[in-house]
Image: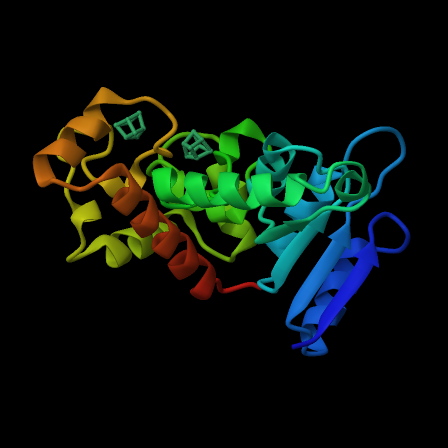
Length: 219
Ligand code: SF4
Ligand code: SF4
């Protein structure tokens, strides 16, 4: 297993991350350093969008909320630096919190919705049918999809899965439905009706995100 650690904002992060992935590394470990306080979360998101490599995010992780911010930009794992020296118990508390979060949500590092401006490309799994002018068009284009190709791909994935259902949702199928943390009685009503738990819903959404990225025409 080969892991490479880099520090953000020194050279071109995207070029470097792509080179590390192409060279065959298994893991990229990113110190998301930036000027001023806090971690450079946007660099984590941009590296996630440019690569499929296992990504460890590092910098300013002092709590589970900090870890969640990195997870929702595409980090698969986080690492803790100075905070672990001051409070070694943070390691156990993070492990417990991430495990509980996975159990309760079904997808511990689910992305943010793309329209919030912070979602990585995995967030396309939560996108609506591309019928209105919004961020979905540019994001689908980044993967080489026309709006129709994107729509067809999602419908192809859901065929034969519980996500195919959802007549009473905005676009007639759970394929187009939002993240479970966004309250919606229409989606939740369908989940109840087909006896699909919120966790199973999110696991299927994760599989759909992988399916979309696996079929990207531009990488
Ligand atoms: S398609 Fe829907 S979820 Fe996606 S960016 Fe547009 S408004 Fe947001
Ligand atoms: S039905 Fe609810 S979850 Fe589905 S797209 Fe509409 S608002 Fe989102």
